[in-house]
Image (cartoon, rainbow, N blue to C red):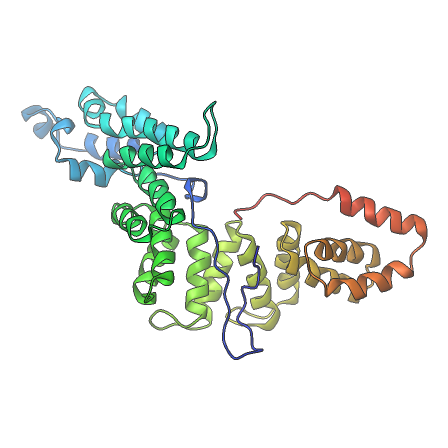
Length: 338
């Protein structure tokens, strides 16, 4: 995993890491509930409700998709229980969920089926044809993996226009990687996904703004989105937030908050954060803790951890060294949003 996410001054050019496109798991946890629509419908005047019966199955399908295209299966089930017209209108989207489930089985070789990317794509496309933005995103991912980027971006765009935050995030990333790139439009879509709470989009938006993309870009704006993504559990954002607090870039300088976010990133497996936190503990005389983090950083490929780690180990007794190795061997990464 490439983890150098902070602009480097060594060659005069800022450097940023790319990261995997978002999938369904990274989608913000709160999807609009069908009960929001129930409330608005029930607020219609009683005189109107006496004049005619609402038949949602007669809604134009493009209107229905704007309401329900990014519903998850639980919300579709809830919506289908509201009344018969809702149940009839949402039948294509319920079918899309079945195709989506089979697509994931074929893609990952689960549920007693062998991995088959062609069958996975076919299932996702059938779900996308029935209007599910979740299926559009997964089909777009498969197209991207197959090198058919234009087709993938087309599906991302369709789902993004229907309000799917993961699609908006993926479209933004795609536009940054296009030839030629379109950072202005990319920032527009990343911002939409970020406002919706999509942590990967928040992180990528911060990187793009940090690099100078976007109107009225300043140091405070990327720092704000780094912090928001960090609070949402995105590890690389935790690391960059720690750097912002450490040097006072875009956030008020605070060594206490810098240490807090660096430790959080380190505990979630960010090797550079493990190195930085280990060195910080070493400077404070916390030798046992320091050498554990430095050992973890070293195992993750951070060679700069070795000199300090070896100096500390040489000063320890055999039992202390054994204790350090035991702690490092038993260490488990804390959960995160990647």
